[in-house]
Image 1: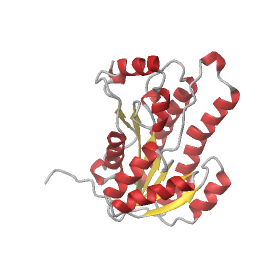
Image 2: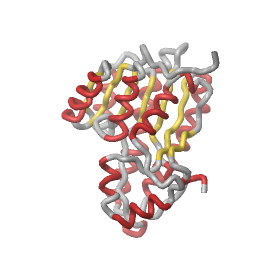
Image 3: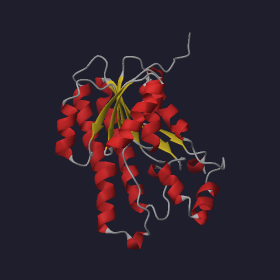
Image 4: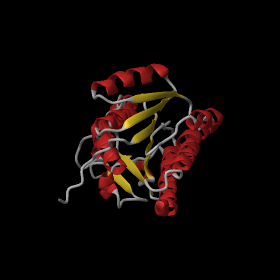
Length: 252
């Protein structure tokens, strides 16, 4: 038998930004694959809704309400968790601005959330994974096609996602001997509430779609399925790299 199946039974997956969009989709998909979910979000009501969705697929959710940019609170709440096999380091955002008009507040917020907080979450989770030396773990850092190519008006977002790609390569090399795999999933624009807001600008929507050879945006399911693959033993020889889900954008 050669086909490895995606089976996450008895695995514990921690997902940041779990309340909405890609994080929500990943949480549900991981639960469908058998994992127990620890969902982290700033909004309790979003986690309550997620819990109902996960119950529908007969999964289990532990809810953690936390702003991951608050390191002390993050550290305190993660200390209570005994085991993490999978990390989906997903929380992040984008504030599009022309380069010459980028505000310091915008830049600092994006760097603090997309890079610093992601680093802190990964470090705290790795410390738990290292206690489980034989089994190790899998870390999926949520990146973007804009961690591979540039785009006008997204300069700070570009910077943070290229940073995540670099961090992933470094972690992948250093943690390989400890049986901890680290990869990114790098989607193009995905059908999420955030992207729907961006696409209200018809010119921007046309520009984005014209850059995707397949002529369509990704679905949350496209991203969540790739995350489940990387989380599973089916990807046991994959580390320090990126799965780009962009309909051919970066191939041009």
